Length: 101
Image 1 (cartoon, rainbow, N blue to C red):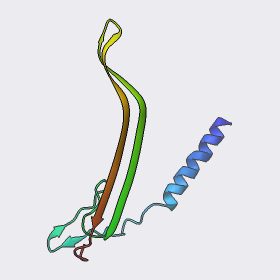
Image 2 (image 1 turned 180 degrees about the vertical axis):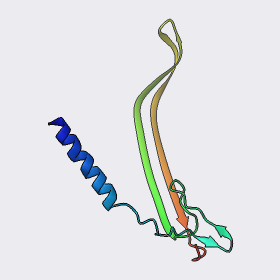
Image 3 (image 1 turned 90 degrees about the vertical axis):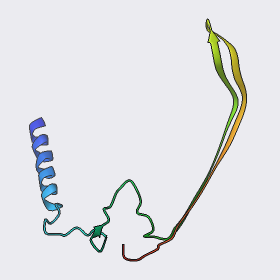
Image 4 (image 1 turned 135 degrees about the vertical axis):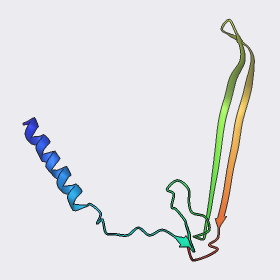
């Protein structure tokens, strides 16, 4: 029974990879200007090709914080105590400079 299930899964995987494979003659389009090619990167957004505004706001609060700084023989001698509140504000604006990319 396990062999039958294995062969069914294997055949479905092979068939789906054949059916959804890319056509090898499909050309990849890369932005270029003159002799310079701009290579795409999935981790870094391309600058100045899209106009957009993005903002974010974050707020955090921690009450009754106790951080021991100096501990001797299991006893804290010096510690920081108090409350902590922080705010994060981010604003980003990109403007499309040229339409040739």
